Image (cartoon, rainbow, N blue to C red; front, top):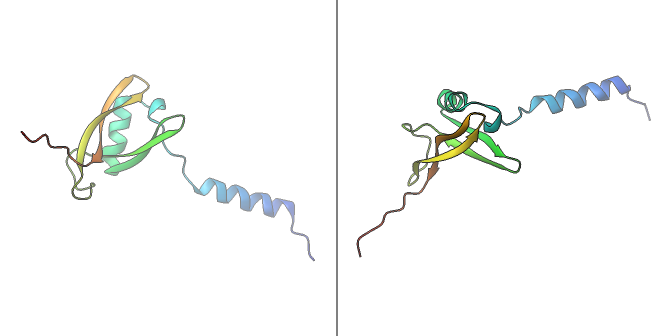
Amino acid sequence: MKSVPIALVAGATLLASGAADARPDTRAMTCAETKALIQGRHAAVLTTGPNTYDRFVRQFGNECDWPEVPISIAVPTRDGPCRVYRCEEPVFDLPG
């Protein structure tokens, strides 16, 4: 059995681990940066807490699958709570 040079294995491991982008964290960005990121990508999966993340979308776009619509929610950012949008099914309160 041939031995594989350690530098080759280390390089391949580093390349594989660097290929995946880290998920942006809203807590490390300002509200303006968070909104610009979502607007620029049309939709983005962002970390919002130590163990939480979600997919956020533009307010006016077609990033939500029917019957979902963009619903405003607040996420933590470096400069305080920030209103952004995520896809949810609308809840209608029908008169009864």
